[in-house]
Length: 172
Image 1 (spheres, rainbow, N blue to C red):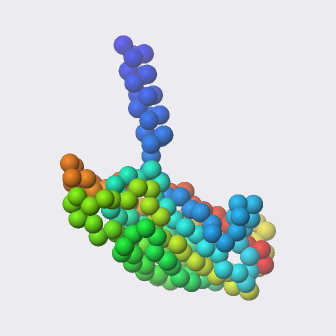
Image 2 (tube, rainbow, N blue to C red):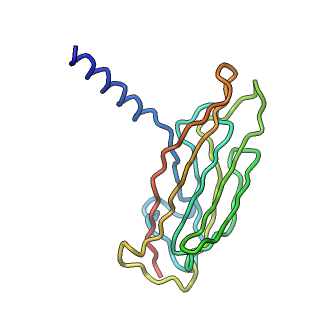
């Protein structure tokens, strides 16, 4: 009996990991061989996606980044969502980029599958030095990413999205 319970728990854990919803970042300014660093005096962009999210009606998250003295938020472009609101707050140690995106759909409308949430662009200032040590890396961290799912059968529900920090080296 213990063995059966153990197998059931392992199967459940494996299916949860395999089907978890998450935030995916895709650099748009360079190919994958250069995506681990950013360069002084250049813009860099990122598409942000909600992966493995079906029937998505909205996404909200806060993204924080450090090294604000060298990295500046530039602009955004809407992704697949009709309504996108961006709020940028310059705090003491980091910059907060708060993103709220929604479809504006009603019951019975077709919701989004694995949507592109938004495209964000940043500028690396010319004064940015080469960051040689790991403690000088630029980190983009996501706080409380959540997706809103809408189905006629279940109504509205919220799903927390996994999101790992994205770290870039800076070339001065």
